[in-house]
Length: 219
Image (cartoon, rainbow, N blue to C red):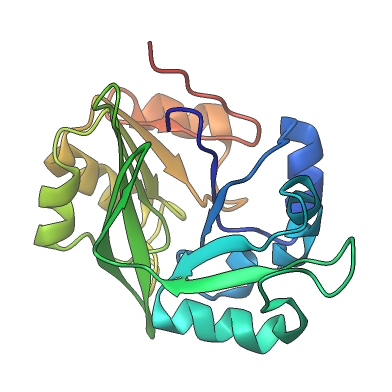
């Protein structure tokens, strides 16, 4: 947003995705929840600490997410890395509204089995463009729908065609997307059970299917 770079979650192959996507800067790290497929790549943030001049990366999450970071990366909880090349995380519980010079991030709680996932709605200050990021959830509560209503981009969990106990199925995700009525919706967190082109033929015009390396540019 306005030149400030946010990274949401870090999967186990995070380093490879950074190389593939030519990611050269991260100013803030936002952890939606503490499950392994979203947190296990955080150690690879060490390179971005170096690029920040050896200062800690601000990490925002829920209380559950921060507890998981502390449990998995106790060596990284500091204002500065213990040595050059190490990671350092400055942990802060995510507020309902985070005001920054570049814009505003509003948050909501999304049910995901035994934990709640952090739903994020970004609004860039200069353009007022908005992006909602709703991953890993079984449903989208009324308040989360209202927060993301008519957003420019919606990124939403759509695990598989069949129902799942803790994730939105693709039909459930499409129903939620219709309620939110974003200008463009992308399904994420899909499994091997969905073939990309065939699935997108079924989801368009409501949503497109995201893929690794996808870049979306708002004019």
